[in-house]
Length: 150
Image (tube, rainbow, N blue to C red; front, side, top):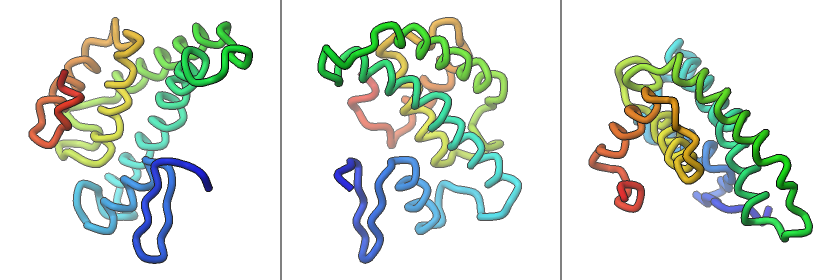
């Protein structure tokens, strides 16, 4: 498929980081609510929300600032993508508790914290104190990669 990241495990070949994280959590039966449970519905809702409403605008910004050749960049899309991210961040902030799903740390917290961390490169969490607080809590977790703590 020519995509990264990719996970190869036996006959299973997966791309897309959110799918990889979910598959690994399901396989290990850790950090994810049981399939079919109400908590899993909430978990999956925020995973899909993160992918479509938070992560996608960040990719638009990144592509148009750095990744695309200059002649392919659409700089006019950057403010719209930033506004789209901020609108979604408001929704997340309104629905977020200590963790994404009730009182338990899940793979959704990992994915959302990473996405929020990425948004700080463009100062997109300004005006979202609960999201900033949430991100700081996640960055203090022992398993958080050191590179994200800088």
